[in-house]
Image (cartoon, rainbow, N blue to C red; front, side, top):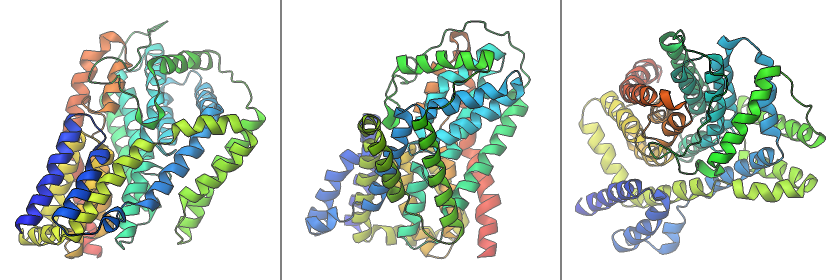
Length: 452
């Protein structure tokens, strides 16, 4: 028991240290996994390394490379301009439009790639007299929803972990639940902030994510700089003003067809009961586009989300060592000792939301989803419901200004709006720590337990 507790305490300490020092958690976790495995678990080094999730690596690299090409050849930017230009003067549609746009970009491998919409959304809010809080929440909920698509990081981690543990979880069900929850939150946001009058700004000063709450850090694997974000926000003004967008190039049309092929293939395979290998599809379509346009293929190499690969790989490798040592079985017995499995599930959701509001959501998912497996194996709660609940609870708090997502929304807002936006996003994020677990326990875990 003492050895297992020491291994678990080391896991928590390393996670906290890396988060506080703003170092890639997986990078720090991997050598500790080897040390604990060799020193305390008496494992062979190849067995420790064998716990590295190669299937998830293939998924992340394949998907982010494919969509990296779509960014590099301008297809993503063309889609954004085309959609916004069609809204015209119907200002009430902009929150929903930015929800959908951010969700679509978030679904393209790296959720934080959706932050490229931040300066664009805040510019539109200023020019159209919309409440920046509503726009921030529209983009934040869109980012959270898209992140659980089968083609995106949160969906890959959550579904991949469940699948490797033999838990029946349809990736489209996970995405649908996340989409439904975030649409409800968008509707609530519209009721709360949709009618606030504010003067229209003719020529807003577009701030890049360089000030406040640590928002100057690079955004996910996309490394967008302040100048790049400003440029995109400036470029969208023309589309918003006159509703004109140049037709796509031949290469962009081919890319659009490839994107549609990927999405349709994933949906069809999942609906028919198969297991779509999204990483292989991404590699195949990415290779095709790279052959057509080698320059875009080379530029896309820099957009592969290696940071997330290291983060997820290191954490899951350590969790594999914990499993070998019997730590997960020990946690399952402790959860069963509570006598109320639903209470244990609720507390896991609270922990997921609370820590994710201040630390890495990706890291939290990679850590908590495997650690929830003992509770599932004890038969207390349905696995698919608990894993979905943990994932959504960890994601909907990301608009907190203490996270990269919320901080970016604050930094890209008008200077006079930032204090109010910081205060409101703090309240919203902390409220989600309670609202998410309560809602998903009542609407997902309890009904799932009855059905099971």
